[in-house]
Amino acid sequence: MMESPEHSGRAACGALIVPPSQVQHILAICDRLRLIALPYQHGGRGGREVCFTSSSDSKAARAIPLHAIAASALALGPPEDPELAALLASGEVRFEAQYHPPPARGRRSEAGQIAQSGDDSNCSSCPEAYIPGRVRCPGNFDFRFIELFAGIGGFRLGLEAVGGHCVFASEMDKGAASLYEEHFGEKPFGDITAVASHDIPEHDLLTAGFPCQPFSTLGEQPGFTDTKGTLFREIVRVLKALQPRACLLENVVGLLTCDGGAVYEAIVTELEGCGYTISHRVINSRTLTPQNRKRVYIVGIRQDLLLPPFSFPYIPDLGRRCGDILEGACANAANYTLSEAQWEKMRAAPTFRGWRSLAWADRPAAAIVSHYRRDLGNTQVVPRDPPHNPRFFTQRECARLQGFPESFPAEGFDFYHFIGNAVTAPVVAVLAGAILCHLEHEQQGGCNCPGLAEGLQTVCKASPAHLSDRLINFPDGSQESLGCIVSS
Ligand SMILES: C[S@@+](CC[C@H](N)C(=O)[O-])C[C@H]1O[C@@H](n2cnc3c(N)ncnc32)[C@H](O)[C@@H]1O
Image (spheres, rainbow, N blue to C red):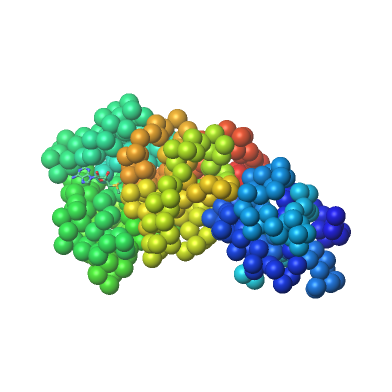
């Protein structure tokens, strides 16, 4: 056994022990026979691994760790492949069933990359925006909201978390509307263009994630020249007629750059024309859920309320990772695993970036898109153990990435489309808390982190049970609790 002190600490595995001059040849055989983990499989992300068996002798044999299934097969007897069988019989190459690889950090892959190891657990510390002496807003408000272009109700999930009551929702897509009804017990109205303003009830907050295709950087950005782009004017119509105290809109970041910024400028001008002061911020959902999803959130506050400018709240980065939301062994993996043809097509797409394109457990996922699983060039997949191809996210995993609760019905192929279009619910909760706090308490000096605790609770509801237990409280000066999810 070639174990040195620095080689201890990682689980033993099966490995081929080979002379340095034979490394490339044996690697080629291993590739041909699929004996080593590939870059898209667990254990293969850092490239093909070749270990030194001695830290002082550069001429010493090298070890090529095999994946578990290949090692178990070799442990049972000589391989069927004549070339490898001959090398093992000659003693030139040895199989060691209990090889102890060196520690992961600093280990060099064949390609010369430093092998990746997991990120350290990341628990957000006290928010820098916390101001001692200010009260922490209870974050539970009694307000009425409407949800235009409701989809499957991402806004409603976040708004109900901070005490909102939905008084009107509109969604034209029958599939999305029926899922909405299944979860919330209320059927949204259909086409908003067919609803007269006087049929919409009075409300405090108008919310809308208006159709984004005309502004998305994935398309040609026709902006307002596209009929879907003009649906924005429905928001303007309702704001003008009903004058809620505030509005919260969400869209793709491409909205800001569409037509050199002219489209966003026109949007702000129209909203200001309705009597609102407008501000916006690009927020990445990855602060609260393990998904890199940058979206622009636009807040409008009615000018005649004479409030100071609205400032967007501090949102802690919980450092969450895919491992927090993966169904793991429970997932019906066979139904989600890519066929050879799908996997080949995905790898051939110009957007494919090798192992970086996969959703590793220790990293946040890419944005879930509305054509997830349909457009393989824009679909992130989850690595599996060798010898399996990667798999798609399950619908439940996508729901968790968007902060939708475990109680939400997440089934069927179309669910990918609906959830990819949705807004991230915990981000809405935190923003709505800040808006309501601004409306209710600003004259009293403002509050600390309004809506934050509710946003975090929304995160918990969208996590597997073992993680939702990990919502811990840490005391601030006034013994109020914020909250923090520890991913460890
Ligand atoms: C970007 S999605 C909004 C998703 C939503 N925020 C959620 O969390 O699920 C836009 C939605 O607007 C809907 N829509 C488009 N035109 C509409 C119309 N004229 N009336 C009502 N809904 C419409 C689409 O069907 C789509 O579900």
